[in-house]
Length: 316
Ligand code: CDT
Image (cartoon, rainbow, N blue to C red; front, side):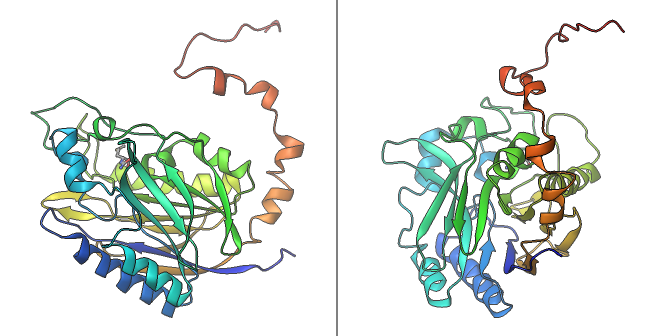
């Protein structure tokens, strides 16, 4: 019988944030959802990627302009401080994505983990940056994460906080198996992430329904294969006419969806997550120490892109 270590885990999906919306307006929405999650028994709330602003990588502009309008040079700052104060007052922690400009002027797509005392206990800088860095004037919108952000400077990590071992990722990271394995090899129990996923693919005419399919299939498979709870928060709906998918979810280590958003607006999901639910998998089919064979996986770290077949010694 798996031990029952319960944790009230919430995802706070956000509807659109338009260019005209101020940080103060956005933080008010985050505070309302933190309070609702607390009222429904949550101990930790997952907010989206780049939660404080519109998804600005869709707009072509100079780096300097983007940094002045959309980045945070300090965290918490005066606009966001009320959210940190609520966290401490209510005893609820949170994950929050935002555009970070370091004191040295380095721009990152960042997420922080704030504990139930309102203290920042973890920081993750996005590793898998999708999109392009050139101007695509014929595309309906841009995806300029490669122009506006540097690749994160630290590997995927986990933090012991709020009674759980929690790993962080951001949006495109969720599509890569390496992301999840890095954290499950550090005994993560929960992986939290925020995302902004445009409904339209600007690179080729992909059927729109595949965006949601790929989002859910990766989260469900990754939660199961890594024996973790996965909590994913969208910013979604049409931001100034540019639509992004919803589908925020909390997925159990069984690979089953425990809660899923039904709107494309601000919406809170709460699950009383049994952190022991992954134990049977960790002790059996996915007992990494007994069954993994890293001596046969060396290509995973040696090669970036696909290449030649490995030489074989066996006669086939
Ligand atoms: N924000 C972000 O990383 N968005 C990307 C869009 C790429 S579309 C395959 C994502 O992976 O959702």
